[in-house]
Amino acid sequence: MLELITDWSPLARGVIALLLAFIGTLMIGNKVILKLISMKLGQPVRSKEEVNELFDLHGKKAGTPTMGGVMILATLFIAVLLSGDLSNPYIHITLFVLFALGLLGFKDDYAKISEGNSKGVSSKFKLVWQFGVALIATLAILYTQNMCGCGSNGEVEGVFAGGLTQHKPWDLYIPGFDLSVPMSWFAIPFGVVVIIGASNAVNLTDGLDGLASGCTITTCLSYTLIAVTGGYIGIADVASSELAVLTLAMTGAVAGFLWFNAYPARVFMGDTGSLAIGGAIGVIALATKQELLLVVIGLVFVIEAMSVMAQVFYFKYTKKKYGAGRRLLKCAPIHHHFELSGWKETQVITRFWIISGLCAGLGLAILFI
Image 1 (spheres, rainbow, N blue to C red):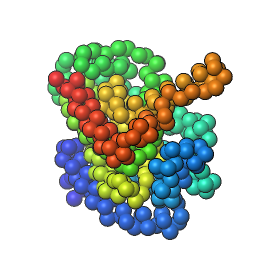
Image 2 (cartoon, one colour; image 1 turned 30 degrees about the horizontal axis):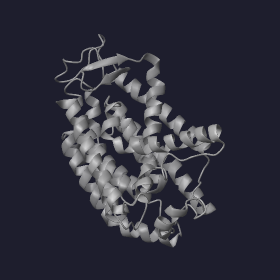
Image 3 (spheres, rainbow, N blue to C red; image 1 turned 180 degrees about the vertical axis):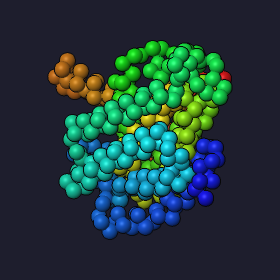
Image 4 (tube, one colour; image 1 turned 90 degrees about the horizontal axis):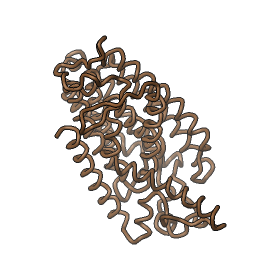
């Protein structure tokens, strides 16, 4: 039966993976939540002294079980192992990143719970781990693209390859203009930044019930279409089409998790899920040669990350200039700013989902129209 399934198209097998992951997550969800509660793996929140007004809004969430990302990763892995082509190198790379960053997230979540605060592992440790994982993944992707993405003359190989004959694996594709920019060895640090940036951006977005989950679904569905078609229109190598199985499996797993994570959340994905999911999205963007398009499709993630960077920069700048730090936003990431501005949590979540869906559509329009 498994041999028969692997002969089907990536899209057909992706639908199977989606159903397996979604149903599997629903089946184990309650049991995992009860297990997390029994193990007292509750989410710590920042104290009233740290965030006075925000504590009034989120203090009641303290103790909600976290590390729910384990159910996402478990069902995702099973779905991909049953439905995917396990000889495909892109599947190996993405599963490696999911496991490695999931392990980092698990360590971070456990540190927060055991220490009873929201600090977790040190930023230095987290960054070094992410850098190592991202570097290995980037080198593996570039090697794979060199092996199966271009012929000896540098032309893209694909069933309908023809328009982007100068698009080489180490080039940066510019969506909407049908051209590529040579990057040479700069492709390596660029790829590392994409993976680390995506991982941390999803992690920062995971601050409200269901927010990161909903935005992840729209992003994954967009990259499903990109993966299925990219190799056959000459943008990426045909082997990357197999990632449609993984993006749909992730969609199913996250949708099943959202069933329990929707407001009011019964469980949080924690860093276990968010760091892994974000890193995987970065890998998929690199493998499909749509790194720049990720800025559009994943604009909510980008804005969340940029809001934190802007807040930190502005605070340090004003502290140096005026002697006392000032805040650009009421609280960062930006979803908390809107909460403190009077929006209800459900309003923030729904409106950010709407923006995410519109950005996904815009990104696809830029690429295909």
